[in-house]
Length: 587
Image (cartoon, rainbow, N blue to C red; front, side, top):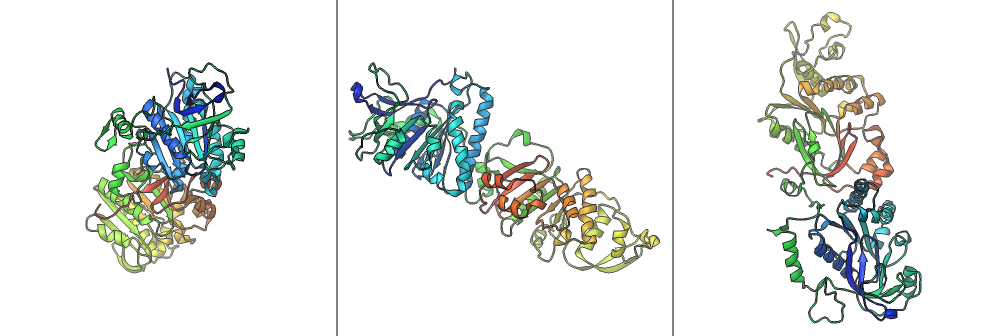
């Protein structure tokens, strides 16, 4: 049988009508908790006491705790074994991430409970306690406006499905939609009118005594024979998380708080199997990223890969996703066209290096063809690998010797794009004679001479990666459009059999609609190193991100920090935010 209640004893009531001081008990399966109080009134201490009790009474299979710390005083709780996630307000992405996790938890719990309430189910998922310390900072922040309704939904729908919300606040302003779904209300040191607003009735003033205030009764006290009105507020004195020597003025609960801090930690380490420098038994942990995700940090914090993502072929890990910290990978074998979008200095070169270094490591027989332009952004990578890897670098206008079928040759100065076409025709695909005629100095109408242009020799090529950095590819002219409109679709159709792929390492805007459509239709994997909502709204309508809803993107994703970006599996319509591995030399 699963949990039918989760009683936590958090202090003592003073109920004059029965002349007793019963335990202040809360059932987390029956009540969300709203705790109000001025600064230094005991709100954080109350949360610490609650968190300690959960660790004493429940295991990692029964309970998980999520903390959003807008007050900044709970950071020492983040490594506790039942704390799945602890985030402060320094990184917007983590705040949004918690809501995504909890939305998924609510959905999964509804499915798993099959229409039953949590406490009525024989088989239960772990219970979730969601704590927000200083919710006023959350509701007052414009960037979290879209999450106010999500939080209200958790308050409204979560309790019956195993998610209990606990929040602290210094003011009631803007919190009415949440308070209505919190049966348990507590107030420490508030103005008289605020007490009346919280409890919808008159209460007496109370002095400045931390942890001392008012709370309504939501759980019938044990052993009480007299009668009193349950939901009225009564004075309450909340317990400390640990016994403090020579401190006699604060209510203790002998059942749950008889231990010192040292005793608490000693028992915690035994219960949750502390070994080395960590607990071995914990709730599922959601981590935070270091400022730079080096390869060493990547190996340290990555979580096990989803088995459904395992596949044969050349698979390259490029980073960790922001939700589960699982590797984000590209199967080069099954992703013949990879497109990289992004701002300058946002990490596109780092990503390209990750991909190329991974390919070289995984595939011994490989050739890399670099098609660059006047920016020379591929030159450094070409120079670093040309001695160890079969490679070709095309960038400048150059004089090229062209051979005909009749063994005659001519020398012509060709543009980088023309050199690229000749190289493709010689090694990978027979191009149209009309396209090649001008390159070979032949009139397109001279069929006899056109037939003298050599076809592809169909030689056995190694696995080939074409790195396209040149702006020429995206220009709206007949010669330039040939690659995207004609050549690329033909090569992509046979890429898996012929063993090659294309990496467009800095995708530029394409003005021609037809050319743009052809390009988008060939892309299998896209990376964006930019703020996705802004990108989709300003430029994204003509990219593979064009069908995404800008409003939803703004709500779901925070602005990118350096090293952040997005992975988009076009066929699966799967978008993930990730932190890229920093591919530093010597790592």
